[in-house]
Amino acid sequence: MTTQRVTVVEKILNANDQLAAQNKARLDAAGIFSINIMASPGAGKTSVILNTIKALMPDIRLGVIEGDTAPVTIDADKVTAAGMPAVQINTGGDCHLDAAMIKDALNQLPLESLDIIIIENVGNLVCPAAWDLGTHANVLIASIPEGDDKPYKYPNIYRGLDVLILNKMDLLPYINFNTDYFKQGVEMLNPGLITFPVSCKTGEGLSAWADWLKSHLKRKG
Amino acid sequence: MHELAVTENILAIAKRHAEEAGAVKVTDIHLVIGRLSSIVDESIQFYWDMIAENTLCEGAKLHFDRTPATLRCNACQHEYTLAAELMPCPACGSPNIQVLTGEEFYLESIEITREQEPPRKRKGKG
Image (cartoon, rainbow over all chains, first blue to last red; front, side, top):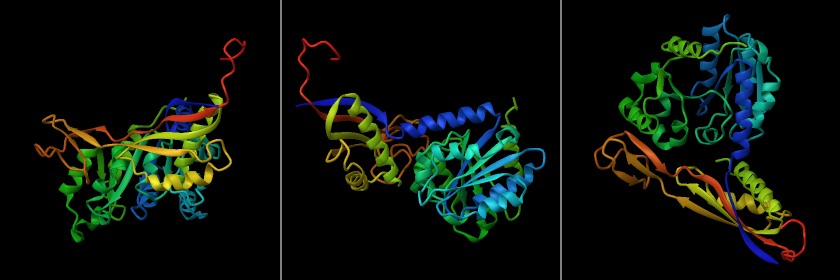
């Protein structure tokens, strides 16, 4: 018997990253712009998605992939009621979506007739940050009641973002939320991050977010 | 976070490389994990003991090389190590900083046991 050291140097989530790259190639080929929406539970992911659908209908066709840890269809039902196709993923208790789940979900959507796919990740600020899904943009929805210290407590999720949506702006007068402190945390982690302050209650800021999405539409091949 | 899924990935990578190298047993696994990744070592070890059972990795010891989180200030070039919470440059106060190390998350190497090497003069794979 002999012993030997074998050099590996392989990223631990390499298998996921490869599947994510395949997902992205497939979305590119279908002319679809896709986003991965992450947030803590209750930040307003579904509300933002429903308002986004409303703002973009009927010219732009969206599909939604809903991730939840339990076998519920509450969110998917709302999207379907709004007139757009939705796929519900039950992660079976897992804290995040991964690229393999998205690969399966894409099989269930009419890709040829969609312009945008929105993925609603599991409500969690830690785990989704580590798992690339192959989308074109990572979007975080933070909300005023969560507090201004979240960038400091969950740095990894902020570092990987392309867009930040700050929701529930209508609550700012009632909550001790230090906007400068919040912004400084974001700036340290992700300088110049595109940020949309919005309120799903008053409608503030939602059209700017919808315009950003429109400006990223791909040409259907 | 998601330590079970991470541990499953570690096992898959270790097994694949061990099989390619003709191992009969994996004795040690060396992981490099930066301080900025939210992984709990004990939790990985806990899952490892469960899922490595009855594989050629059973009983392998996990070694965690925890690289520190070091940052550089883009304004004054000062370099510093994070002890706790994320903070602006301690020298000049600028929030314009970049991460130098601390985001590593890979399997560096494995130590394996092999059957005796076949004698050199024999033809075949070496």
